Length: 308
Ligand code: CP
Ligand code: NVA
Image (cartoon, rainbow, N blue to C red; front, side, top):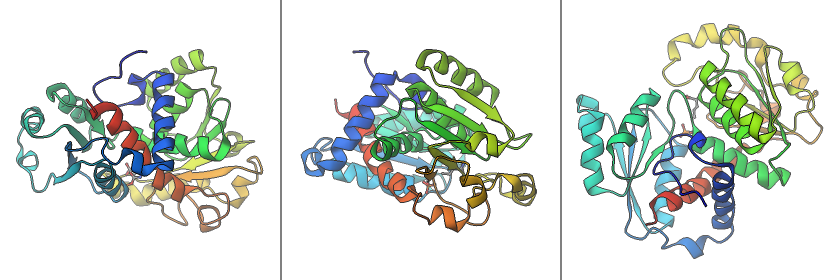
């Protein structure tokens, strides 16, 4: 068995079997919470937030508590990082106090730099480029709802953003088919597209990148979307509302999916923009399960990286 990498920055650093092992562990931890109540006893996680969060903050904090450890919430507004202390020095200092660092930030290079200079595991809690913990929670949810990943027809409609990237990379790594519809000018990053193609060659995933939401959604078993304006893009909100108008997940669009499709959204959602209430609050929606699974999958990730 290949050893696990030190950090969880992108699912690309992990093999298919390692990712499936983490998902399987998350499902077992969810079923038998008490069995793992001392699994990380005495361990400490520092959580650096340079952006807002509800789910990521609470699920990591509660997750550490449920494993017997503690989590420290470090807002960049309050720590010296926010006043210009280098990320490398922050990594070196925190490595002397705690056993792992979770970071939510802007540029993905900051996550990588932190990991390079930390002697302890670093977990990506969202960068502008990727949100791998969310993608893992989403694929745990797919296992629970669909009973399989390989061959599942996964469709993403909306902005070619950090969620699209994380979902596309994980889907193609694990052998799910991935279709993605974005407006022109909002396509997924070229580097990610190349990585997905490489993944698909090995896993057998089919890849469809289009500007036509109907084409992407046709026969989908999973429809996912995300906000049109991500954190840091607030000034573009009005322009994006116009550019994305034809990419709303509504009941006209979902008719093209398979009848038993599930709807996914990482949350927070904007009803009436990227998705309508009839869909996100309707019987096909699994968004609360996804949110819950952030807790279980992150416990599994922390256990895998931090237990020694
Ligand atoms: N989905 C997600 O990461 O939510 P938060 O921004 O609330 O952490
Ligand atoms: N794409 C969104 C995801 C939020 C969890 C953002 O980056 O704001």
